[in-house]
Amino acid sequence: AAVVGTIIMQWPIGALSDRFDRRKVLTITTLLAGAASIACIPLSPGNPYVLMFATGIFCGLALPLYSVCIAYINDHLAPSQMIAASGTLVLVGGLGAVSGPLTVAATMDWLGTTWFFWSMGLAHLFTGLFGLFRMTRRRALVKGRRLSVTPTAVHPSSAAFESMQQHAREDWESGEDAPGDAVQDDKPPQEQK
Image 1 (cartoon, one colour):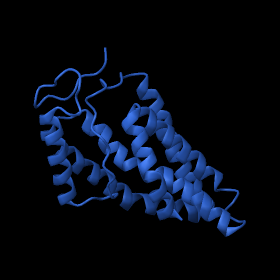
Image 2: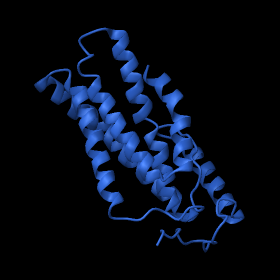
Image 3: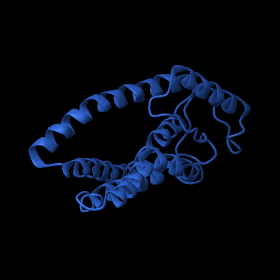
Image 4: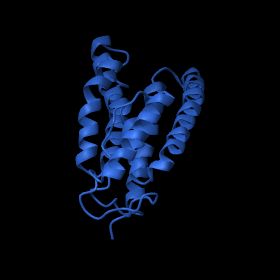
């Protein structure tokens, strides 16, 4: 259910983030994922098919966030900075992949199995609330200087990073993603005034 939900939802979420402010798409999707996780709590002791469907919705909202996060970060960087930023995201994701299951498992042993959904839901809800707070502190990126989302695995290979960087560099140099004001080669795009 988790894989099917992710496959179904990755394209629409990526397309929305290409058309609208990525911060809003990230924040709304994160808040919806948190709500979907918490909605799984009363379903967990009941019908396993309903729980699988709800889990598919949660994963369909939560797992595509990685690709949109990379696109959001790359919107603010010059092509020469993108590989380092993607490497940092992989490191942070790896730390979460190691510490998350240990922390959640300990919490589930202490407070019960429904805390799996509570922990996922609360983590997403707090992250979404932080996203709302950050939107009040920083302006949106100038339209026309955003890269399009390329769906990626949660931990893509170095070849995928190189391919994404090459694609971004070609778009950057051709200016096809920047119909408005041109941006100098190695400077990140400007924010709206």
